[in-house]
Length: 369
Ligand SMILES: *Cc1c(COP(=O)(O)O)cnc(C)c1O
Image 1 (cartoon, rainbow, N blue to C red):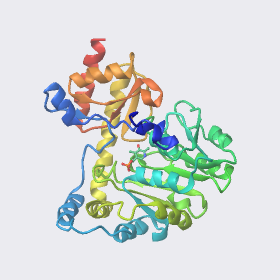
Image 2 (cartoon, rainbow, N blue to C red):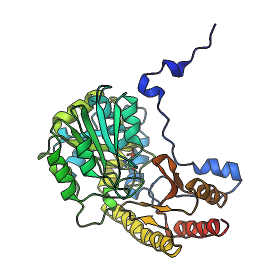
Image 3 (tube, helix red, strand yellow):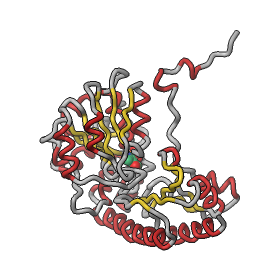
Image 4 (cartoon, helix red, strand yellow):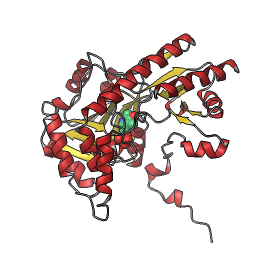
């Protein structure tokens, strides 16, 4: 009898899917190279780590992990509602904000629909689009940034969702509040516009604004946020969206009942109340970003100005080669060929010593080119 091909049996969208490639884990590189003291600047995690309040909340709630979490995440939602001045009903919690992005696709998009996003945009947008068998309409970028004019023009009667990353990963590019507002005015209300603000806390640009205060004005607006970046809780997996309550109702219908775990709920709530720690993370990033930017400049490498906690720079040879050269020196960064940027690398801003080590290692790799 013929051997069963289960990939051929997979849902149509899933068959063509290639799994998300995460940054290389440090333990894996340590095993491979027999090195220790490896640094990882590959996944836009906070180099500062979690704050004391979040850690205390994890320790405290660990005692209660025999019980299911609060499926509605009431305490965290209440804290978020107060923080953002929105109603509880407008919040949807996710196992990371990626979970919410997937809920949006599962809740609203079918194989008859189209989803619009930009070239060089966050990899999860094509993933969730394909997983539901929908067609992705990928618009050209303008200087590596989203071209909102092209994105508005690309939306058709079949378009159900548009993903906008502001700032975008891996390019670090950001859009002004005026530009996003004009975009919202240009698309029909039945097109859901997702504004992904994963790096909101880091942005220090006068023309930039969060769109959470505009969810009442634009009923088709969904803003996503995460505790994975500036709050330093990537390993716990917790994020959320703020939207019209009716949209949130749909997302909650497809959500797994206990999608956010006990420790993540408690840590996120504590982190939200720990302004001092957030400020510290943002300040460490500001200083580190300055150093990396200056170093790339001195090395004569073109870079894309970034509003996030990472920066992408163009290399004289392929990003994959630079990646391998840096690995041999115990430094993990991210080649971004899968974002159609084969001669770029993306590096996450680290602690001072980590940034110094990255810069030294990069100089060595380029000198041996
Ligand atoms: C890191 C990132 C996220 C956050 O993902 P989580 O699932 O919350 O960890 C979302 N959007 C973008 C653009 C990102 O870079």
